[in-house]
Image (tube, rainbow, N blue to C red):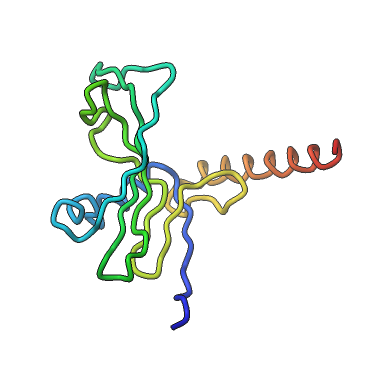
Length: 144
């Protein structure tokens, strides 16, 4: 069977989080729709306080897989924890990648198309960052 053809959408952190909540992925984790595959926790250096004043000491990479869909990755995210491994920050993972059906949502980074849901001013800023990224790559190539 051939791999499906995916539609790729790049979103800023805000809109990727909204997609995460809109499609109820976190609820799917608790209802057993997804299998969790946590990676080893990494210490946060230096530790920092979150918005509630809890000191964040650990970050954890989380991967959710969908067993009814060939065990394909449905979410990649990172999650902050305090010194006792209780959730810190917002209490929910920050998504970096989401797959819903045949659509893959990626966290925007320079060099990718801007977030289509952002305002025109924010998209202009993303285009400017893309140009700066291209200039830096050309400079690095010229030096080597």
